[in-house]
Length: 471
Image: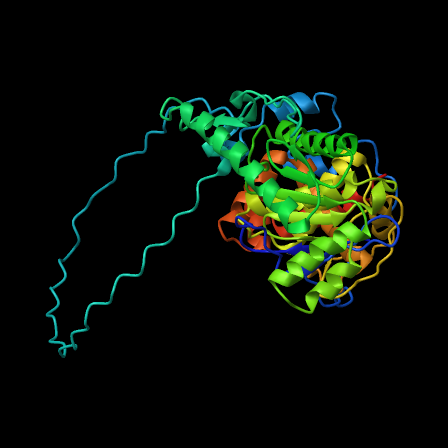
């Protein structure tokens, strides 16, 4: 199982430890720390699902949610024509305007004088009312933050994995995006080059800080969106960087946006230790800076998470290797940054599990908080959730939204993963709208309903039918 520790502020010149441990679970006896949550009460209103085979003409659950035929081989082309994340159009707005029609001519009104004009009423004097002092104007509402996708536009994704010992790449290679349509022609592109130089120098400075703090020689791997400081062979470290870039490319391809890949290598980091000895050296350094009982839990876990940093024990590179935990922690960094740190646990955990599965087609990691949480999973999470759907044991989303990783059951984790998978795969563009809504402070229910344009109950039912089809 694998463990993680979270922190709110980015690491200063000398990295600081996270404030509370988080644990993520992976292969073998590994554990990942994250603040834990109380056990979820039993489901009071399970989602009803039918296990009978649907007729051939049955509407696919994804098609029902988005209005698109997801079974057609033209699905990819249709997805590519979807509007950008902050510009999801109302389907009605795409329908052709009706042809103009000639308005019907109404007959003239037959105006006749009244038989007798009514006498005007004499107004009765009213008692004087006390004058109320003027009320202060309410404070103006905080304007919604602009969509991240409006600020930047994607450059066609080219994997960027650079080891410290590699020849220095040109500064242009460090630039992960261009200015978005609203800023095209209004911003000096030299700003991007200057920023790339600053990012490169800051990543190097932080790498030296990690080596000094741990007294370990680390391999530095830079990608466009995270720096990896690894106590691994160069080949293993490069492989981790390539997997992280694979996830970046998939997210940008699906969303046609950089809104889900807003992390940067000068602010977001992964620290990978080789074995228990190296891992405990890092925990010792954290505990020296910030004493606390929670480090006992961190030593039991595989790794930890903060707002800007993830770290974990690679277990000497034992199968399945460090890629799973690196992808899982990177997914958490991505969704936290995309939501400005406001991602609720169900979205944070579910998106991390989705990212791990998108690249490896497996799930070996999960998180807990405050106390170890030993849960068991099958080898295939999609088949696990299908089994619960066939038995009509799926939990309603109103029970999942409040979870915070404390005492969660295996069904809770599976549901977080399945919910996020469904919402993302049904429509990446609508999923970006959901992320934007969370970023702007909406609660989970409102954010989902506004992004997908349907009541939560309807979305849940379509998700339940979709879950029956998973393999």
